[in-house]
Length: 622
Image 1 (cartoon, rainbow, N blue to C red):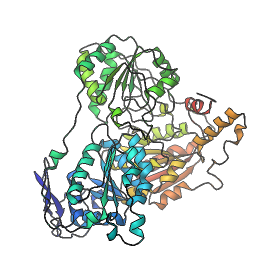
Image 2 (cartoon, rainbow, N blue to C red):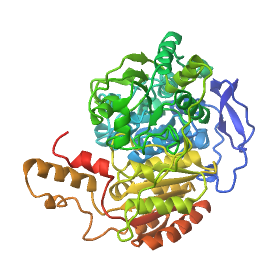
Image 3 (cartoon, rainbow, N blue to C red):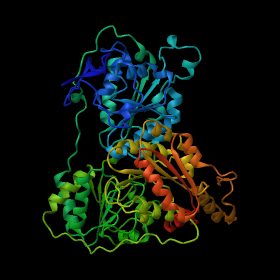
Image 4 (cartoon, one colour):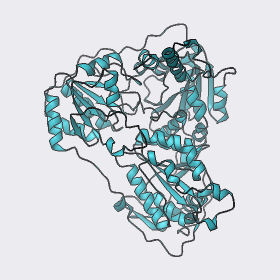
């Protein structure tokens, strides 16, 4: 067991009695950081504080006990007590603070970190106003089923102890109600001991499938109270037990029988882990069955997109035609926590004739506020466990067989024109500039063509913002790059210009903490998604579609995105307007990232989406 610690005046780690942690090694001093290590940034003077003296010290101990390495935050007086404890009691280490310029960025960074690690990071937001800033990013994380611990603050709850004016406008009766519809759990504890319990519970719940954000609101008075007696130590591991749901053997046997007898099985590879072994098992299952596989750009890579059994290219709004045809001809469909089975079936022509096997625990999160659960799908066999467990069980139940792997045929990349610079040119030339380097697409624009870039590893693509919250791309990518730092993978974000402009200040956090990242802006100088919506309305009303651009174009003047990047401390390239300049510019940008920089490349592209997406968005009716 290890008791929680704080940095003392000698620079060594001193003991604090309030919490014990199991399965962790006592350190006498912080390990020497590598060059450009994040831990080297924002080092406080040793405060010589060895034991908790205030409520917020107990809260800080609890936060350290979760093993969360970072807490992204935008500071505020409502949690000034906790801020002091993080700095002067814990020494800004485990967790280390990551200063952000906006609460939405702080939460987005935590989402991006979870996309890579599958584990919760912490974020702190100031009072009701900070939480209101953060709500969009919280919703993104909720829709993405990403774990995180969000700490807020209020008060003092005791009105007699509030400072005039400011404490009153920053106190709410039920602050958690702002996010209760899209968090797994929230609490407002009334004592340091209760706050410790809340943090342990919130972290445990966030990391337990189905995962998602949790929120703990800390009373300013509880943080700042002087402890009159020690808070009894607890073994935190006993309060955060690992929860694993096994695949029910009888249901796995039924599913295996259906799949064994299927002539045209299809696998919808949906929300799954980043685990490499689980990735290999999905491939083995598909080959054992000879099943065709669909993937989706709204969620992270779940199956190699250049595998012979993968159908077409991953889509976004609607499945590509060959995928829709495969669903229509299927006799058994295995959904591995597919994001929207009913919507996918609708795009393919309606409820399928095939038997549908659904593997998911997502229904445990569905509530009456958010409709992110999508339409109710037809299901013939429900297996309530995580997909990784079900796949392993199915492989065992199916037994030995002859794998079916059709002859490999080269996947066709989008055909490129020679006149106008498009997103397909951007993707093609970026892929060629990256070469054989391991790379992770941390985010892609709505205009991205799934055929442009093969995914061969679970970290090759990390999915969308999930909630449609424009502005999340930069922050999510910073968080993902943080988790990928020193992994040998090149983190690349491809953001639309609207997304970039709303979230650009997140890049300051990356430059300040030396988190290398390449951001490529597919700059069509328009909120083009809404241009298509306006075209659709015009078609339905028999009005001129030529007016769709009014109130949508981001031009007159054009915005200097490279200068905005440089203002955050990043390296800026562009605007790139010629196809011939793409590869030389990308090569310089990649070299700068590999040297430790944050780099933004502004590429001026022609507006446009894939044919399937454009058709889905502009036709008069579904």
